[in-house]
Image 1 (cartoon, helix red, strand yellow):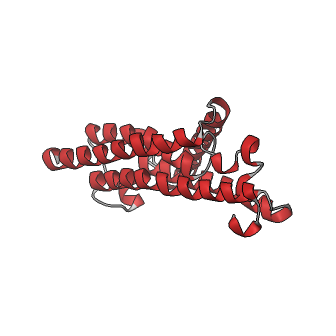
Image 2 (tube, helix red, strand yellow; image 1 turned 60 degrees about the vertical axis):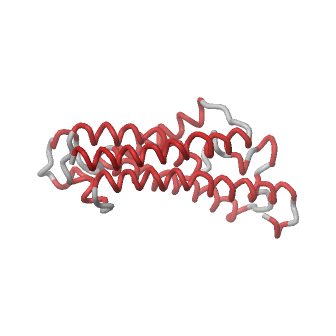
Image 3 (cartoon, one colour; image 1 turned 90 degrees about the vertical axis):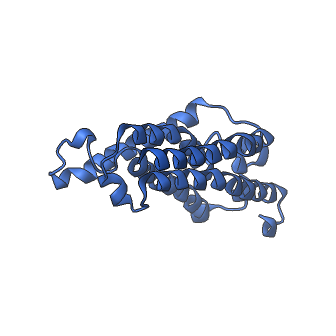
Length: 198
């Protein structure tokens, strides 16, 4: 960023910081909605608890917005504005080469795998098959979770290949004028439904 004395790196670092802060707010509020819905933030409890149909509808309603926030948090396309090739060369990574640059690239993919595992656990039952199929077979759990993670990684790559990159001001407006109000509204809706239906 600033220490490299390079304008591209400085602008990329500023964009990265603003994007991280902007998208962490709705992401956190969507996580609070899931916490309110489940009553526990233990991932094992989230997977093992039987849910009524209306809870699944609420969870799957959150998923598209949550996925958009995760795309922005991991700086994947179309939210890769801190390192836009056509504007900033490589953004904050401009001054890096060799193993340092490779480490940045590797961390990006590790973030994708980690967030895919969290999304698979929060929204798609984690290591369990649907409808309790083979729930007493313990060794199948890691394979089920790995399959769900691979599907979500495919979704990451599919979005990257099919959606164009917005301008930076459009990205910020989308977060502050759309995602943040939606996350607050969803949290309030979840709280009301939990109070009246549970």
